[in-house]
Image 1 (cartoon, one colour):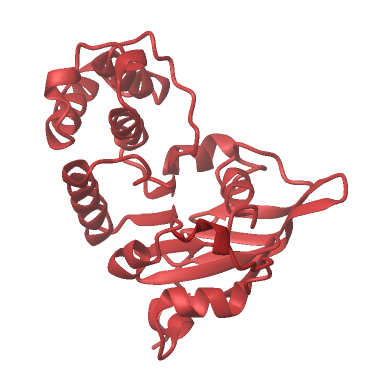
Image 2: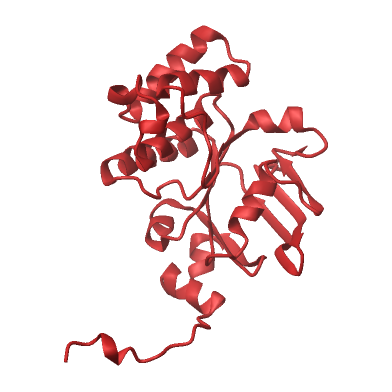
Length: 256
């Protein structure tokens, strides 16, 4: 008896984006297993944000395809996009709404019933410790609070795949703990998280799978243990990406 084939939560094939002479994404091929906590790591300018933007429908690729749970994102966006929850890097929000209003607005955009929106909004506000700021305009939020309210907006419609670009950046340790708990529970319940990060220790702590991206290409991908081998992920990362910076002796920094 053959086992059923599991469709990847996200499948990228030949994904390409070119800006002049820069190939920000160079024929990216990547499969994100369903139910995985997938880390995407790479140096600044490696193409992580460009790739994730194309993978979530925020940026149209020059070539290639994206499938979300087997559905072609660009051919059938109305079917694929409801499966996605997205927290982009540098997200611009309607910051003259209160936090509560912004989550409700996100739910309405997703076509949810008002009663469902209200219940989910209140659950998310409580879980993310935003009750004290629920009636405050988002424009007055700190960077960490704005990150949390954007995460709530990405979760309100109960997506199957959650794509997060640097979700812990500018987030305090208490809030980070709450976010980690939400994401771990989401994966335990059958969801899939795709997360970019510069913090290797965080990726090692949370992720089951990882891809290392450099110069617009996937340098290696697989389970965490397959990618890092016998070393720590950071050492493997440096080995793959290389350190081509010019090193000079900054003797003038030393006290005389």
